Length: 242
Image (cartoon, rainbow, N blue to C red; front, side, top):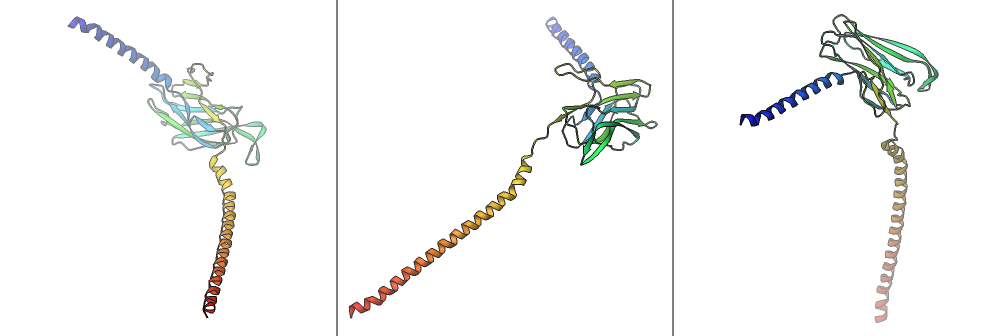
């Protein structure tokens, strides 16, 4: 009985060891800088969070640099304060200018740099989100945000590699925001059409009321005529008997 069970036990241990090795390798590889949410609408505004995990076992992340794409500039970019961090905003010239709410903007945000104050870095086993508000989002398929992550031991991880359609994910992928075309809202169309429909309803209701009034008048005249005939008959009958 022991000999029969030994191969099964060996196979089980082997599969467990392989699974542990695979999962152990897949865990750190999946932790990279991302932007959340990862999809938005062209021409709209949105609140996004750049999520930065710490992949080091001994050092803290003390600086995060994010470069906005030159081929997809955004007119309005604002940051939310992050406790223990300061942010520096760098701008660049854009040509042609960006039109935002009727104004022509000749500059756009080129780079955002967050720096941690003393003892406020992203420690091992932790992550930090850096909120950003952007808009109007460009008429493009996507926005690629190349990021640099600096550790307290001097190491720098460059999250700048772009994925290719149908290809494997690179080792250090850049955060990507997918942009979809804006679609016409059926609710907006309904709101625009509803006043016209309401007006038509009022007109038709008035026509129906007029028709009912005419019908009532005709019925009243008919009843009056019938009453007159009956009255004349009652007047003639006594005269014929005499």
